[in-house]
Image (cartoon, rainbow, N blue to C red; front, side, top):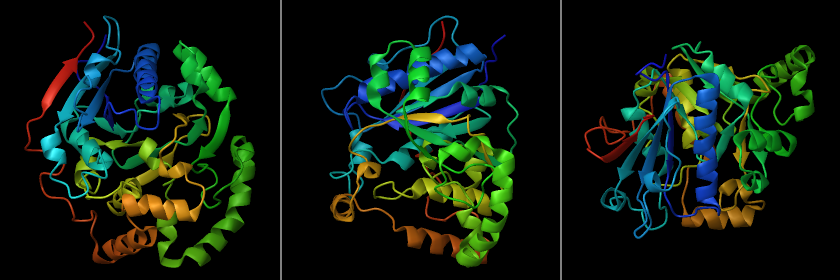
Length: 348
C-alpha cells in the first residue's frame, strides 16, 4: 500500500531553454527513469521541479514532461519562480538560473522525511535506487554517491532498462571517492571492487594526507566531487545548515559548502558503494567541459564564481568560531514566505 507521505523528496531545478543541448530529452529521460524505478522498487517519492525564470514563449515543463500514471509511486510538483524574482539579481542578465537558490526553494517546500538534491541530467543506477528503497537512512548522516559520466547516445534508446544497460557499458569517467579509500583521490575505477585491498592501501596514505592538509584535513575527507548531483540528508539537517548558500553568482563550489556545513553541524558522511552510483548524461556548456585555464578564466569573467581557497578558509574560520552555517542566507532563504505558482501531478 502506498503511503500518502513520501519518504524521499527529490529536488531539481531547470528551465525550458535547451541548456547544453538535448535538455528536454535529458529531462524526459530523468523523469521517466524516476517513474520506472519508483514503481520497480515501490518507493513512494515526490519529485520537486523548480522551474526558475521560465523563458518567454516556451511551454512550461509540466506541459512537455512525462506525468505519473495510475499505478505509479511518484508524484511531481512543479514550482515556478517567475522572471520578476530573477531580475532582482545583479547577475540576472549573465546567469539565467541561480541553481542553488532554486534548489533551496524546493528544499523549503519538501514534504519528504529525507531530501535528495540532484540534477535533471541524471539516471540512478538500480543499485543506487535499491539502496534508497531500503529506507534505512539516519538523521545524523549525509549521503553521497559516485557519479559516472556517460555519453548522450543513451537518449536514442526508448526504454529505461535499455538506457541503464547502455550507461553501465559506456562509462566515460567516474567522479567521487571510494568509501573504502578515504584518503586517495583520483584512483582508477578498477580498484573500486576490492574493498579489503583498499583499506590496506589507504592506511599509509592517511598519514601522508593528514600531514599535508593540516587544519583542512577533515574538510578534504569529504566527498565534494560532483556533490551537486547527489547530496541526501534529513529535512531537518537541510534546515539546520540553512540549505545552500544563496549568492548572486555562478554556482561553482556552493554545493561543496553544504557538505562542509553539514560536517560542522555534526553530521557524518556516508558514501554509497561503488555500484550504487548515478549516471550523468554528458553535455556541453558546463564548466566541467572546459579543458584549459584561459577558457576557464573567460568563463568565470562572464559568470563570476567562488574561489576554492576562500571557501576552505571561510569554513575553517567557521570551525574556529563554532558556527554550523555560513550565516549568509536570510531567515526566509528559499523564498520561504513567497507564494509561487505550483502544479501538482499525482498518480490517478
